[in-house]
Length: 176
Image (cartoon, rainbow, N blue to C red; front, side, top):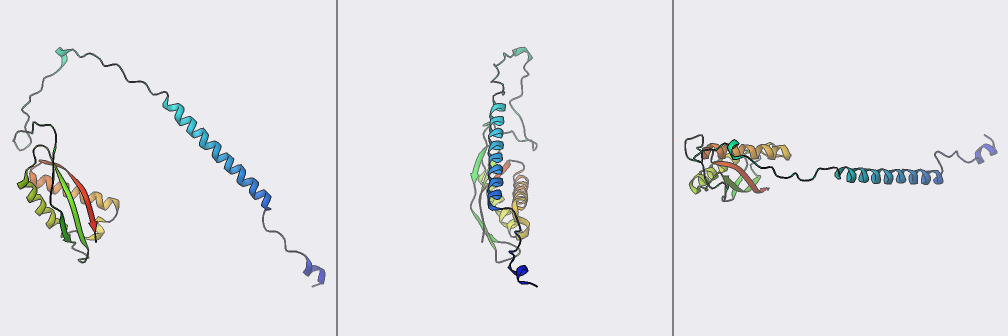
């Protein structure tokens, strides 16, 4: 090697700083423009929504009358209040089946289709306690595990109450 070959500077391996800044500014301007256009488009499409329609008159001759004494599947009269009854039950604290050193604490409310029944709620509480002792941690991990747990509890409550419990509200679910 000669001295002149050693003194040559190594070749640059990329675009200059000015070109990089120019590309960054162009991309930023394009992003701002697309955001503005998207916002303008979404706002203008909302203006085409039709206004609330005028109520129409109903001819009473065409309206069917319904029987007010509806019954449930088990033959008992349905609740006439129309509003569901919500009954919070005592907190459930127990350990899981596996791993047995993991504890769970649940605070639940039962939604009845009529007036809440505390005797049925106590039976459901005991059933939930026994069920949670059979649950393994991998069964309840993640969003789908939580959804499956909620569905299992709702099914157990419906069976235990003969369909009077329509929903379960999980207020607190804590694993330790």
